[in-house]
Image 1 (cartoon, helix red, strand yellow):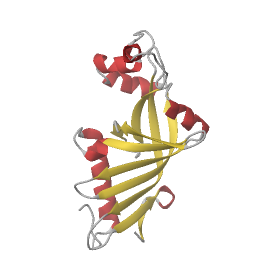
Image 2 (tube, rainbow, N blue to C red; image 1 turned 180 degrees about the horizontal axis):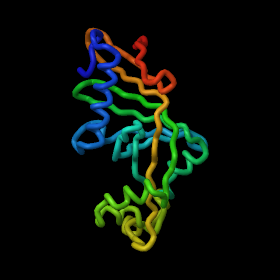
Image 3 (cartoon, rainbow, N blue to C red; image 1 turned 90 degrees about the horizontal axis):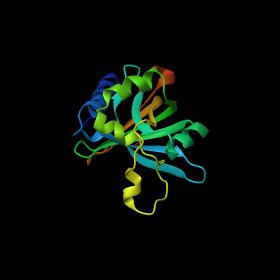
Image 4 (cartoon, rainbow, N blue to C red; image 1 turned 90 degrees about the vertical axis):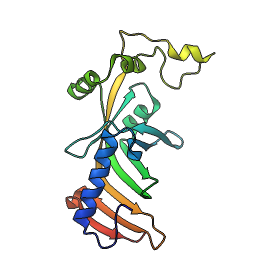
Length: 187
């Protein structure tokens, strides 16, 4: 368990932040892979992405090919939801956030330099993600001179934690508008 009913909201906040930071730093932590939900054209869209960093301002950073459908979704509707789940501790963290897309700016260039040359090739595909192809080999053709790298920055407006427990679930919400003060909620 990550939290108990006797924990103070400030303790819960620090515990949640610690786990989120671990997700960005430890490739084996369950919070490393999160679910990103966007408002698609006809349906909401969900996909798994990799948490690369949680900044000191609480911005969640994720890398993607700028040509991906999720980028277009966020250009149209920048409101997103993030979902983290820790199966061992049976805790869910939901985040409502505003998305910004960084391409060829200082943030994108800083993170591009952190990626190994081998991994950089993942952002040099000749074809955009989701393009229909005749055979799988066509999806791996690259154009090393043209990178399509971007950093997605998710700035949270609210963070909600749900602790699942046999003796009763616990739920708390933290909001930017209240300077991240926690409020208990009915589970």
